[in-house]
Image (cartoon, rainbow, N blue to C red; front, side, top):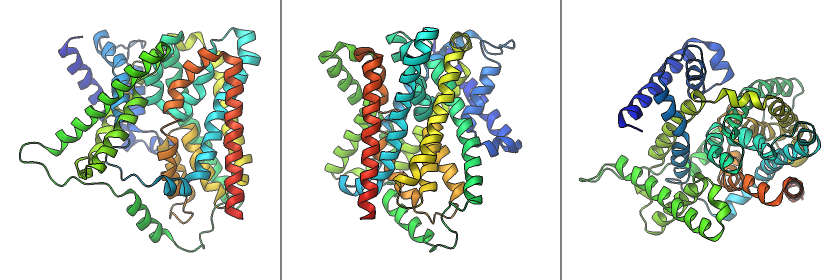
Length: 442
């Protein structure tokens, strides 16, 4: 790969993002759908990419795009904990337990639904690759970044189309989350399921508490010899380096873990770096605003590159199993929202369930968008619980360790045992949620 090709590919991605930003500002329908600029840019790139009749970009550019996501997703996950004021485990659990349980039922259930579909229908009738049982969770809970990052793992284990199918599933998830979620908000208002607007206006108190919990750690100022941005890039590098060392140690103990992607281990590396900074009394070196900006930059480039280089012929080979899994995944998410949320949450069940439905079908930003539609003034108090939940949930599902290890576990255990394990984990999460509801009431 030549340096000129890399620079040309980056310039092309930048141009697509600028065009997408202009389109989103001019077309209200794109704003109403809540589609991020990066996804629009990726779709534009796909329309003029290697599998389009137009083919405006040379093949060497799209070749760089196809190799970019695996690197960028590692950067994204390395930034998750850097610069964050980590609360105590007890405080974290008390404020997020019910939300975590609901999210785990949603996530583990997606593995269960996928496994049952492969065991009972898609495998016997169509001979579908068993690894497709992981696609719903990877695409819905994980999103575009996770789907792109898991591509090499799927390929290593025998599903060459895994990345393309995961990206397509993530796109379906984002669109469905916005359309279905908006419909749910309308229904909730008509049936008066939303927290009353006449309830105690605690929005100001909530905003202050949220600010106290999530206040970013600003850098004390650049050193005379090194810039704050340089320091934060170096911290990301240290997190990634620790992730590499962790993977080498794991592979040495169990060679099958060679298929484990690097990005969840880079997240663990970021957590270790942040804890070391706090122990050393230098947490200000990691700036939350800078880490957020660097992570957002990497994610925007990742989504654009991954979608623009989407291998459409691979989708054609498995379009029927893909459609079946997507419909079953959406049906599961809706069923969990309607049936479980009222029984699991002691208060504001609609807003709590809606936020997780948005995240579990689309992305975290979609969950926040739907929550804002249902609770624009923050009176339900759900934003705090949803925010704390991410610190417990994301290291495991939605792109965390469980997501990364699931295909390896499926290959090791076989589809029947893996599906049984997914059922046990789903029931365990359900039991935890019901227990937390009982505790809150009693």
